[in-house]
Image 1 (cartoon, rainbow, N blue to C red):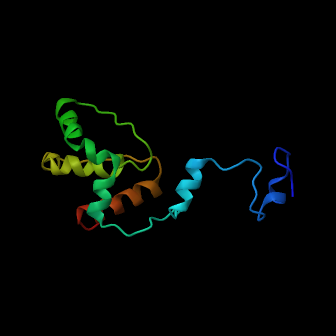
Image 2: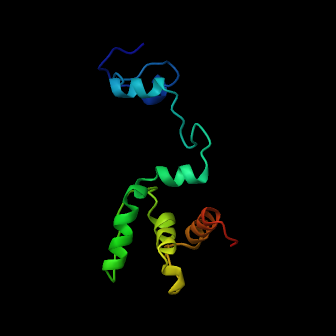
Image 3: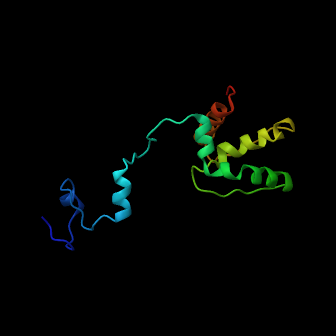
Length: 126
C-alpha cells in the first residue's frame, strides 16, 4: 500500500479502495445518499420535471420581459430550461396567435431533439 502523500499512478490505486487524497466530508455525505449519475433516481411526471427546472421560478418575470423588450437575451446553465420552457411560456402568454415562435439551435440534431421534447411537453404532434 502506498503511504499517504506519495505520488502514484491512478491505475495502481484503482480498485484498492484507496485514493491519494482523503475524500472531502461533503462528498462522503452525498455518496451515502445513493447518488445516481446520468439518470434520475425516480421517474417524475412531465409536469413535475417542468416545475423543478430553475427557469420555472422566473416564468412571470420572463413573460414581462418579453412584453417589455423587442430583444431578450437569456443566459443560464445547461439544463435550466431556457430552450424548452421559454418557447412554451411565450405560447402560453398568447404569442403563438401573433405568429410563429422560433427557437434556434446550432446543430440539426439539437434542433430535432428540442422540437421532440417541446412537442411532448406541449402535447402536440411533431
